[in-house]
Image (cartoon, rainbow, N blue to C red):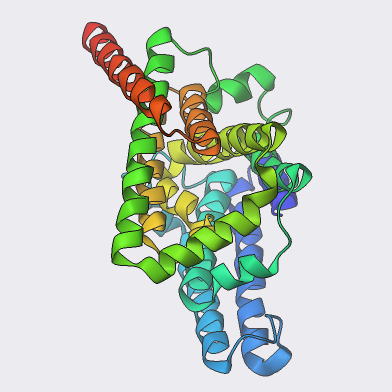
Length: 331
């Protein structure tokens, strides 16, 4: 967990030597990742011993290439070029570390998805319970709060405003609920498409999903799966990161952490959902994107079928109509 690095970068802000210290901190992070890949490549077998030699080499190479890509942000001219189209400060150590950590996360996650059997690995893990979900999601919230400098550079109110956690207008809530319904339609369509075009992969994804989340089918489990990811992930990705690295990069990062879908059509659907959440955040606030994410997770967890589907369709049409009217009036 990069929490100590994030806290350290925040303490550098405002100091005369902040830029240089931030670069050194980011360089230390890059070096650790590169050394991990090199050490495993040299035969220390830091990765699972069950990984075949060719796949191990590919993963090691991917990790090293990822570290090299992240190292590009150690150079101030490159950060200045990025600042031309992203709202970052090339001198700010927090922004430098955010660029480096984002690149490392995306590169390593893509490498694992591409060159390892993530679906098989998930099946080898014990099923999740509510405590596991809390332990897995809480770090996102902690990193987000530390990243914006709560109690370091900002007080609680200022940090909440920076994260976009504000009281939403009524039209924002309606829009969030309407988009959640559209997400459900997209999810159902992608599931049908996946089973039609890639039935073997779809069955593996179904088996993995059932294994990982099978013990969370009760009311408490459904509530945990709806609230914890919907809040914690949104606060980090849409609240803290998106205002700095943009909608597209944030959506790619968000998609990369959902390894339970492997390389499948479902992963593409997650990316589309991430883009949708990003635009909800961009044109409203993080509170609305949290409401949208939570609502969608709740709909998926409960399931809609039979007569309930007709009611859901009617409600969705009403919500979309009200959202369109509210947007038109606001503009």
